[in-house]
Image 1 (cartoon, rainbow, N blue to C red):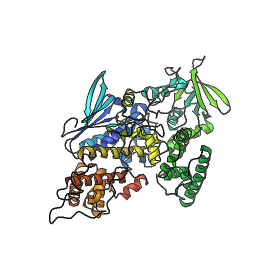
Image 2: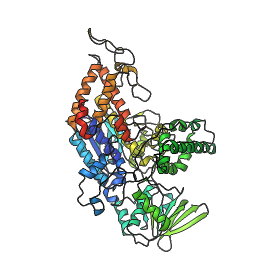
Image 3: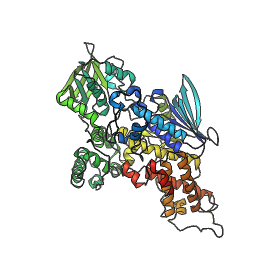
Image 4: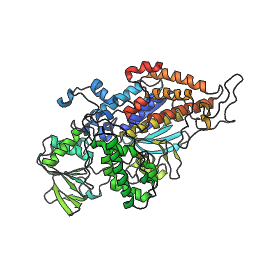
Length: 636
């Protein structure tokens, strides 16, 4: 095992939200010594990524969703809000935010999220068990190769390369840039802004003359950030949002709280796929019926979020519907309707939307519907943007063109040395059904072209977009779907720790089904009890949950342990859990005990990542006490 037998090493490649969240969970979950290396190629992106780093987010850039949904812990929905109000160092904050009381449905500046993640990571390292270590390393992963003991990762730092041996590698590389075939002539032009979330990009927007003419390619929420920044600093010149679909996003109501409604299965979507027109007709009929049910049976749901409720309620049924659509048709549907689905699935806080809507009604912002064909230098020294609209081609001159063209989800097109090497080695496979992201199994383990695990190599975040679509029905804005990333961090961290601490949990015993109990001990139980889990592994690699009150109690304890951040409380829960599992296993059944530990852990993961309910509902359902009630539930 890499590093040493007693202290293996896990490397997380990428220290943005997904990578940091996964490292935090591993620090919480690990019971035995392990070194967790959090590798990041850009120091300014550490604990932030492109979306949240301070230099690329001025104070007017707020989260698109409510502050109450930004907790890194899905089971503790208000953790970020509590941190912002009670723990955050507000020294240097502008007056607008210095005395602000953050609320669950309200806005929060995006740049403070980096402070939050840094502090939660440091807390997790302090509260880790002895020998569970965090190492934050700078460098770029450029290649990796499986070995007999794990993986050798080639890291480039300061112009030199070295090999880092690991027992497991987690890829959390985040979003990849998309090529801009329409702008090849102007990528280095001073009037073209390729990276609006960079420090240079923000400075360029802030320094722009108020009367300048601006074209923003895209109308999704990242485009709103650029437009909103200009408008709040008094911009009067024209701002054109160029959108292929003309999709605009909606604002959440002031007191909006995320929730889940339960609707009938859209049965017509499960009929055989015939053609696109016929399928879209069935979708429209089912959609209108579902929206009518929400309006009739859930009168407390605001009309602005009814579509989001329907989209969320349909997710459990969509994998079956998607399975009936041929791959080429599925890809075409996702390409054509992906942005529209995103607008149905997510909204934004009013702080973001209001300034755009006001300026569209009586200000400088205009929506231009069409596909950008070319951005070229104009004779005037400005740039000319050619757009194919329904009425023909239209040319627009601009003093600044801002690209919010999106991200690359086809890893065959990603311009990165790591991905070229992984594809060349056959260690990753572009997602076959959707062409988005990479093929993984139910645990997030990357798969080779032949469909077998590539080794101790897992993925979290946008790399799993295609799998999320076909496995979980997440057809909306996956890049914005923090719930999926949080669930990945739980499941992958638990899987990695299980592989290190319980390596034989999935293997079969050498002799018989169970060891024969000693005289006077409990006999081997009847099927359905906790000890019968040994041969009850399900198709997704988890275990059937035993109809045994003791097993159910063990799972509850494990859920609490995994959700507990203070080490002393985890140690208390561990002791109780260890004793309970010991009472379930046969006296000499080491293998059985490990299998039970794995079964309890996987059941706990399944409950913690349950997307059939909102996080607040999940907390109540799991009977997880608030921090101040921790001592009480330890006694329960």
